[in-house]
Image: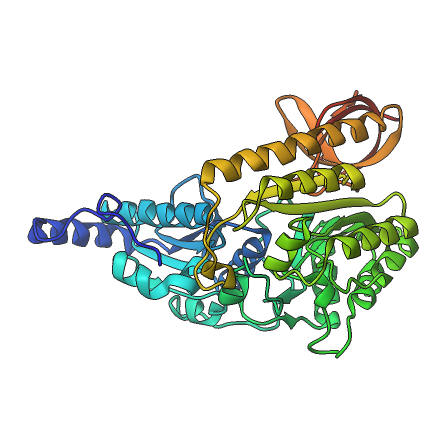
Amino acid sequence: MIKLTQNDKLKGGCGTDIGHTLTIFAGFMKTRSLKKDKVNIITLGCSKNMVDSEVLSGQLLANDIDVVHENRKKDHNIVIINTCGFIDKAKEESVNTILEQVELKKKGKLEKVYVTGCLSERYRNNLEEEIPEVDAFFGTMELPQILKRFEADYKAELVGERLLATPSHYAYMKISEGCNRTCSFCAIPLMRGKHVSRPIEELVKEAETLVKRGVKEIMLIAQELTYYGLDIYKNRELPKLLHALADVEGLEWIRLHYAYPSKFPLEIIDVMKERENICNYLDMPLQHAANNMLKAMKRQINREEMNELIAEIRGKLPEICLRTTLIAGFPGETEDDVEELKGFLQEHRFDRVGIFTYSHEEGTSAYDLVDDVPQDVKEERAREVMEVQQEISYEKNQEKLGRVFKVLIDKKESGRYLGRTEFDSVEVDNEVIVHADRALKPGEFVQVKITKAYDFDLEGELVQ
């Protein structure tokens, strides 16, 4: 359960001068009532949450309601916080953000504060009790109910019509919701429910709409990409979806995130080889390498099977970039397990690696285990693992020196251009610092010769 400390709770109560407060509030309402509502959406957590916020924005705009993401002008009077409830740090950030916005409401700077997303789905009753100043809490699948608060109608025909929170040249696209897996550490099914795929025709239409708006790269996201289609087509249809999306004219890069390793359909790799606009990039979270840890995590795969899968993938597509994520400090993890994980990284030399420290989440089957690895030990183990990967990443980047890569320019920052190769996703992977003798635009593809290589980034010169 989420429990706010006394210091976290909002001040006020019996000592408040009610008459004075009402006078101020009434005056505030008179000045605000003449203005049209403006909604600010604050998004926390993963890219799936970002897509949800973008869809909500599109629905509000279609109902003639002014809406912005992360409004810096602070000229809004309503805020919607799309929360994350995945791990402890994310929950803490979400609670703190809610409290900050409620304080603004108490000071008369906001009229309404609404909360949605995973934290709200998982802890609604507790949050309503602890933070009653919030005007309403909504779950992850309650978009129509949010719209009703604005006397707005849900418009099912608005496929792809969303207000992008990303730069205009790339977008995330959620191909399914929820998850049927039973990983012992994961609370996602508690917040997102069972796996539900979106029809291929709907996704193609959304991709076409996004491309017409200037999107060059689409990142496919789901809690479990490879499960796509099993519920509505009775078959794993991610390869078929990829072919359909690759046919969308003007879509230059398609990127795959979050593919489950157990029963991985190798046809996906065949499609990557066949279609030029599907990036040679696969994000496949493995979580650990020690068999006792994989069994306790209920990953439905062992070390030997992972070895075989990685060899098969690279055998089919040697140039593929493999990204994985790992967990440090799962209950019962020993130093020997950590050493085995390090050896696994050195054996397979993944291109990209992310690591999280284990978070003991109620409602998961791992919650019945003793969380016996202290937090400082979890963090130290994560650092040790990333030190191994840092060396691997440096060596792999050194191999790119002198080579020319197609680079998508993302932005200009501190007088220099920053972009990515097809082997790098937004925010989590390497960037390429591009030196150019002409102006470059975000969303522009250029050829770059690599001249310098660092642990996690590259530097290069524009090739005319």
